Image (cartoon, rainbow, N blue to C red; front, side, top):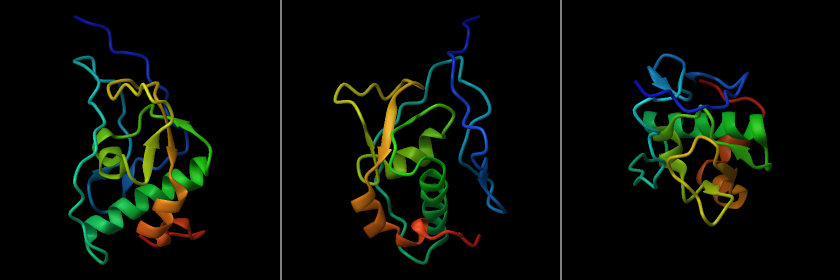
Length: 125
């Protein structure tokens, strides 16, 4: 049996979107391999439930990390992939999509345009 890779857990980060079953973090590293982060097409339109979930996740990222780079750690790959390459980008050019240790950063200009509500002090769920 292989040992799960080490993974930083972001203490204080919301585990998910209340009332939806959508997770923002994972509890433990995947011992079968790290789920890769990749740019996924986003079909959610403003005003839809899916758009609110993406906005809530970005709100949590912004209020936890601000404009500073952050490690992927236990952040959910599916949630990151819906923002990756647009609102959230890799810090390093040699980005490893299957590493819990990779550094990411919010592309504030793009994020504010896509999800202005994520930058408010309070996000109503």
